[in-house]
Amino acid sequence: MSSAMSVQTLNHHQHGAISHHHVHHIGAQTPNNARPTNSVVWETLVRWLSSRDSDSDWWWKTTGKQLVTILADGGYNLNQQYEALLFHHQAVVSRLGPKPISIQPQWRSFMTDDYSPIEYSWKWGMGSDPPDVRYGIEAIGSKAGTMLDPLNQIATRDLVHQLSLSMPDLDLSWFHHFNRALFGPGSPMASSPKLAGSSTMFLAFEMVRSQMSVKAYFIPMDTPEMSAADQILAAIKAAGYSHLDAIAKMESYLLNDAHGSTLTPFMIGIDCVNPCQSRLKIYVRSPRTSFDFVRNVMTLGGLRSGLDDVAEQFHDLWKLTLDLDPSFPSSEELPNRQHTTSGTCFYFDVAPHSSVPDVKAYIPVRHYAKSDRQVGQGLIKFLEKHGRADYAQKYMHAVESLATTDGIDASTGIQTYVSCAYQKNQVSMTSYLSPQMYHPARWSSPLHS
Image (cartoon, rainbow, N blue to C red; front, side, top):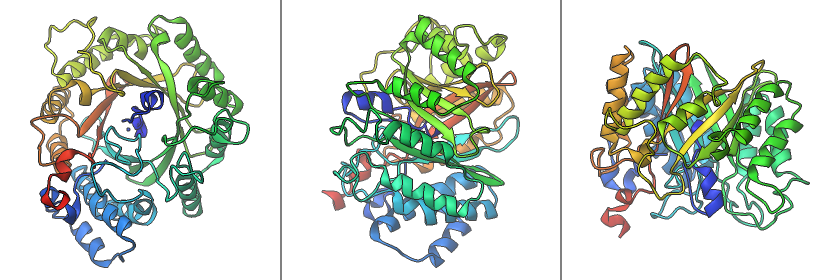
């Protein structure tokens, strides 16, 4: 979320539970998580960067090591690794909240199903192109969940302000608009003071090799006077967005199509650039899980045409990553899973000057696949079929580097989703990776008994 980062969030707000769009190694606290990192970048930075407070130091030693592993596996050169790690150290780690001290987080972030406030993603390149690495966070302030900061928004606002001072291309016009429209004075949420304890803002950092970009995500909650979905649509219309035609087509699909009417909007994402260049991403969720349903959503009920060939590629990927029999009927629902983030998630991607939204679907591998190894094997089989497997083994190394002592054979959890969009008759894919900071296996050490 963090892209998809946040695909878990809808039902968490509805049921008071937690969510989806993490971190691996519990440092010196849990020896069973220690993993050697043969990285000159990491060793150099650890040697020379000053210690801060114990929470920041813990997050740095844990997530910094994870991030440098993923970047190196993704083919980022030393300069790119240094820049990404320095950014992470200077801007991010001090805002990830209190370090974990037990299996129960002090703030339940909807960023991930186990409440970890960070999630990594690996956007697969086309052909032999390398991946782009990204990650999403929920910044967590010291007053999160208290009367002073009931929805944990202060740390995110502080962080975007800090970034604006050092990133001249960062444009916060839409950040401020959606912040005001959804959470400011006069908003439905501001008039419902009992709302507290739920994630409402995420940030994502995309490290495309030549530059860093920032995205923001807003998650309103249902109030007695207005649903979260209606709050999102009202905020879009109040933004003065000049390409409402695509939004109108999305709304029509959600209201009038038998499949579309099962979708509920729960989050909006923006690029922190000039509004005339930013995309709007409207995230939706449905309990439906058949591939026929997914295919319908991807075309907005047939509004997007000429996609039959790439849809067949997507269907192949769907079956491979979920380990479905080749004969599994496309009309059949996946096995029922009782979890607040089960079902399917999508986002409608409205780009400037577009008349019809693009659509991205999230294959819910965490809930419906058999194990992380099986997901990886299915993904690699698809990549090999389409000449895109150059980084496949490096990817599996990154997945394994995030594993708990349970490994990747027995269960799912590291790979949460594989997102898919149609791009020039190919499937554009991103894998989302959770560090599962609060996984029970992280806390099996006698040090925590």
